[in-house]
Image (cartoon, rainbow, N blue to C red; front, side):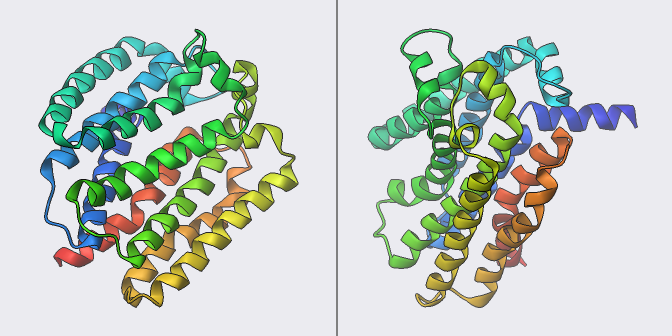
Length: 281
């Protein structure tokens, strides 16, 4: 049992789990757009996610509260550094394979870097800590751009209205998930001087921001129905939003890191996993 728990922690806290989630989301987006498989892109997404997250945790400077994840990362900084180095080399090699799409890959790297840049203790990166909406918006934008925008723009296929709505809808699923993460991290962010909407707004304002994001999420789902997206697909796309609405109050109570890094991270990929299973069965 201890071995299984250690293996579970390793998969979750080294970000292998979230990297697999990113691959599932990207693969499902390709099927939604009617694109052929893109193995080089999937490999790039996997290694890039590992690279970004291990870089982020490698830079996290201290332990905060009773965080199991922070304590684990503090003890395994060398592992984070090794995974960052290996995945960075793999990402560089895959970037070379996709070099003809370098403008989009450069934009991807820039958006992803903005999330962790405030943790670098040198100017001008420390200035980013003062950008009020930075952390939440950068992370949500990265998680929308990489799995849901890159497959379509790299393919060169024309955008349909349902594609625009799909990307819009996914952003407004991911953004409230990021709000819950920022709510949990608000005290540690304040200690590091990192500003976000969640560290600045009162609790009522955060609640309205969360509810407003989910309202846009469900409205965009309805709009997708008018552009030929099937009912079964809409129901799968709606499921994580419904669950997220019920999890808001629960997330404001003390929760373990497993709730955030398995349940909330997993919600981002839930629709994708269900739709892929439906596609292949």
